[in-house]
Length: 399
Length: 153
Image 1 (cartoon, each protein chain N blue to C red):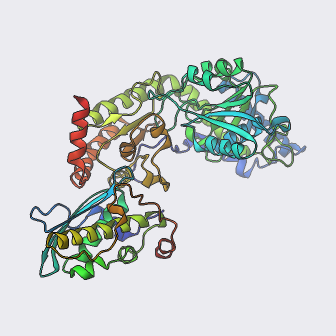
Image 2 (cartoon, chains in turn brown, yellow):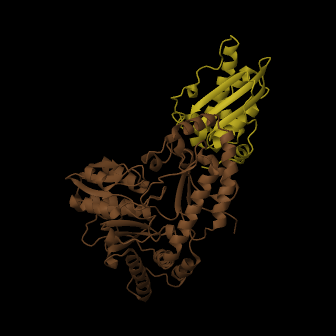
Image 3 (cartoon, each protein chain N blue to C red):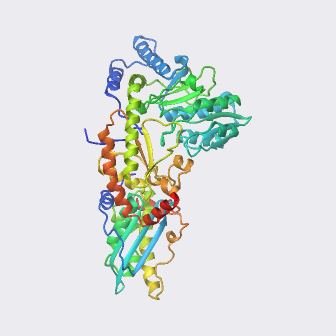
């Protein structure tokens, strides 16, 4: 269709053609409501339950009933935070979230903070990980819920969820993880992780937008967030998106089938990118380079002396799609809260670049990005009135 | 948030980039913590801006507003130059998204500081008045919600 070099797979992915094929019959011939008793409804219900079994099996859930479908990562996160905290009519207690959560977790946590709960935002360390010791120190007798993301969407660091969940359970609280960036990308088993709830998104795994799921361990109480007809075992009302969920499940099955080959392929591409980009651009650095574990497909760079949006717009003109954590690109006043949380200086956070790779990324794409970026950075630095000062400060800091 | 074609054109091909080595006036405004810094140098002849250059660290709008303000100011008298408003800059660019209006403030402020720098160096009274973004602690976003910004978008 066009010649875009798409390097923003952490933002979204194209729906895989095989997924589209699997979904199509459910728009036209197999259009029944999964809650209807007649044959058309039973057919839709069977397809929906098949999708549920696929998702449950993929994430290692003990039973398909532990998975319910939502409209995506944001709904899953909102439901988990508010539904778990307020379950059983609870109206107070202590909630812990990490500082670098997605806003789909931070915002409902802030809402809880305004409605009777106390909220602690726990800082990750500069290595880009939330450390179990830090969580243990933040937990209190009245802590009811902890939410720490599995893989960070901006810097790609993977959190030690199994240990964080264990520490949380020792103090009697529930543990939720936003796994939107790790689902399908790395091995993920909710039982091994020991979490009570986990959020997933379909469009990050070559499934359709508007699909996702929440895993809820059997026996964990949840106040429903969407109320109405009582679908999804009363945990999420609303006529189920059969086509979308079939697409999500199909996409996940493809991720599972291809992961063993895809992880080393993406890791090699990412490492090539890091090596070439930091080699070609003076002072460019990989963020959270000391992370104990990182996702194969995300690399986040700081490029001192340039502003991210300007870099992004020039790359766009060269047909390359990437993202940045600069304030200007987000429409907010501050640069990326994720970069600030790991100690990245504000002025450098304005010049961050996130590159995320995926199924259709090639070596040529990665090389093209670096080739195009070098003159863009040179040009923007030559227009920066403070660049000489920045260089002096950077050189001084290394001695 | 979508930029006008004219913003994109000035961003892609900015006019008057650089520094005048023998500048008569220099204006530096903004703050790297906020992500926007601008430096304007001017050559003045008979109280008219004879030549002008800019350097800007900032987003697409910051670069485009810097570029257009140098185009507007070149050839103007000093009085005319300091009278350029952020809304005139935005209009010249066929509009700016509301969240980017502060960029046009940066551009007009840089020009004002350069003009006053010239006047003060020549023992004359400054004419531009207070320029908030010349203060290193200035927050360029603080007047983001003002009505002018809404009107010009």
